[in-house]
Length: 104
Length: 253
Image 1 (spheres, each protein chain N blue to C red):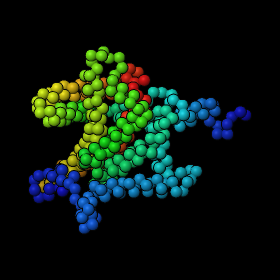
Image 2: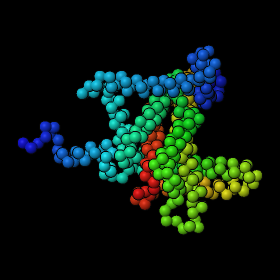
Image 3: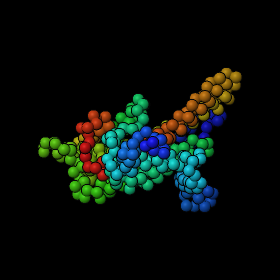
Image 4: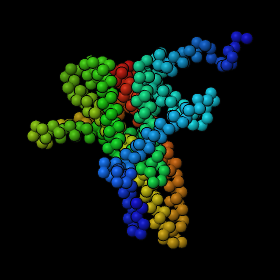
C-alpha cells in the first residue's frame, strides 16, 4: 500500500528531519548535553576536585608571576588566590547549573 | 620494575622514559613514549584503512568498528557543537579521540607504555585544544569574542572582578583537561603495579602467602577491566569537552 519499501514506521518528513539535524543542517531538537561524562559519584567527585584545583593553580601561577614582574611579592598572590577560588566555584556552577540559565 | 627480593614497591618506575629503537633512537632521544605515539597513530590509520577496505554493504567486525567510531564522533560533533559549522571540526575531534583512545588502550598491554600517563603529553594535547578554541572564537566573532569574558547583566562596578575570574576560569581549562586524563591513566597504572608487586611478594612468602597472592591477582584482573573502561571513558570525556569548548567558541554565551 502506501508503506515504504523499508517498512519503517516514521514518515518521510520525520526521517528527513532526523537526517537534517544529524548532518547539522537544522538545529538539534534538544539542547546539547552539558555533562555527558559518566554520572557516577566517583566521576563527579573527581571532576569537582579537578575543576577547583585547576582554577586555583592558574590563579596562583598568575599571581606569583605578576609578583615576580612587579616585585610586590606577597600581595598579588594573596589577591589572586581568592579570585582563583571564586573561579573554581564558577567552573562548578557551569557544570551543575540549571540548564536554561547557563547558556543561550 | 616490580621490586622482587626487596621489600619496597617501585610504583612509579614504570613511567620512566628511556630511548627506544636502539642507537638511532638514542641519538635523537626517541623514547618509548614517542614510539607508542607512532604505534597509536599507525593503529588508528590501520583500523580505518583495513576496516574500510572491503566497503561491504553488511560490514564485518573491523568495518563495524570503524563505522561506529565515525558515527559516534560525528554525532557528538553535530549534537554538542551544533549548527552547520560543526562538521568542520569533526576531523580534529576524531583524530584527538582516536589518538587518546589508542594511547590509553595500548597501555593496558604488558610491556607497552601509556604515553597519556605523562602530564607533558596531555598538557600538549590540551594546549592544542585551548589554542584552537581561542583561535576559532576570534576567527568567528572577531574582537566581539572578548565579550565572552563579560557575563551578561552584571553591575558595572563588578565588571573588573568578574572579568578576572572569567579569565582565570577560562585558563583553568588547560589544567583541568590535561590533569583529568593524566591523573586517571597514571592512577590506574600505579594500582596495577602495586597489586602486581603484591602478587610477587606474597607469592614468595610460601604457603601462607598463596591465598592473598591469588586475591591480589583477582584484584588485578578486575583492575584491567576497570582500566579498559577508564581508557575509553577518558578519551570520550576529552573529546566531548573539546566539543563543549568549541560550542562555546562558536556560539558566544
